Amino acid sequence: MSHLITIAANLVAISVLVFGIYFPRHRHRDMVVAYLGINAGVLAIAAVLSSVDASIGLGIGLFGVLSIIRLRSDELSQRQVAYYFASLALGLLGGTEVADHGVTLALMGVLLLALWFADHPRLLGRYRVQVLTLDRAFVDEQQLAAYLSTLLGGRVRGVTIRRVDLVNDTTTLEVRFEVAAGNAQTGRDAPLAAATNAAWG
Image (tube, rainbow, N blue to C red):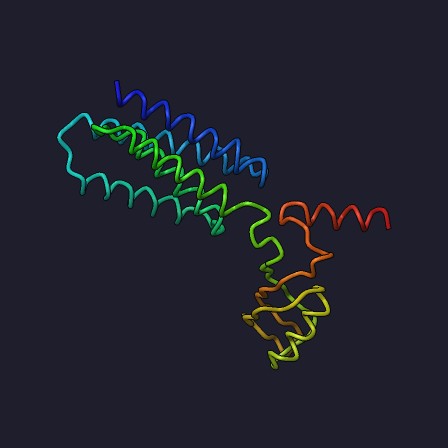
């Protein structure tokens, strides 16, 4: 009976994670399919392993193999990786039969709370990371930082130059910056706001 409780709790938890936290914030349908699919798969496998005489090492090895296969199949952002591992962990917790299911429910709650908090738009919402290609070749990082500060309208916190092409006069870089308080938008709404402002002049 306790196993059915943890399985039901997993279904509730993954629904909250995907449809209550991830999708309303990021609107990425393909990742919804991935999170639900991997959660259901891990849940089923963990439930089978719990019903047979399987070692903990086998379960951990399975967890690692699934992770490697998925992470090598596509390029994921760090945020997507966090949701991906949360869905894996929820499935593993829900599918594993334990004596005290209260601990399992508590751990699921901790996972949901951690993702809700860490990915909240208001948490460090003024800090951004952009990969840019500029139509100028910069070899002086201080000069580049000053140019980016004016271009982006914020305070540059760090710049990593990836490529400088002196022939075609371009610079490819990653910049970490803090936007001014008056210009701050949530990460998801910023492109929409910029497009709207441009359209209405």
